[in-house]
Length: 114
Length: 112
Figure 1 (cartoon, rainbow over the protein chains, first blue to last red):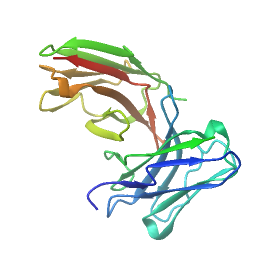
Figure 2: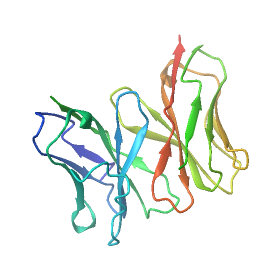
Figure 3: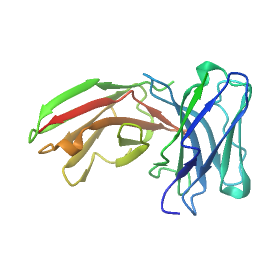
C-alpha cells in the first residue's frame, strides 16, 4: 500500500470492555511496531514484530495487552478489560527490515475509555 | 534506559527566521537518530534519519546534525514558513534495541 493504515481512527469504549485495533503496514515491510502516545507524554514502545521471529513484547504495560501479526502483514493490538488510563493514541509503524531503516507511521487510533 | 530530552518544549518565531531545535540523549550507544514532525491529530512524518556513523543529513531547508559522543542532535530549519508549524520529535534507536526512544517534542509555531 501507499502507507501505513490504521483502523478505526477513533474508538470510544466503556471501562471493562475489550477493544481491537488494527494496523496494515506498508506492503513488503517485514518489521512492525506498536507505540502509545498518552496526553502530555512522549511515545511509548509497546511491541515489535520482525518476520517470523518471536515478537519483542518488552513494552507491553500489563497482561491485558496483547498483539498478533497474521501472515507477516496485518497486526491487531488487543486490550482486554480496558481502564481509563488506557486512553491514548495508539500508533503503528513499519520498516523494510527492522534494521536501521526509517520508521513509517500510520495516523493512529485515538482510544477513549469512559 | 535511554532518556531523550528536547529543548525548548515550545518555540514561536516570525516567518523567515532560521531556527534550531535541540535533542539530547543519555546513552551514546545508538544505531540511528530520527527526526519527525507531527501535525495535530495526525501521525508522525519522518523528516531525516541519521545513522550512527554519520554527522549530518540534509533535506531541503532542513539540516540535522549528530554528535554521538556528547549525546546531542540539532535540527536546523532555514527560512521558516507557517507550514512548518508542528510538533517536532526526536527519536533514537539504541544499539541492541528494537524500538525507538522518543523525546516529548518541541511545538513550533511560525507566525506569518
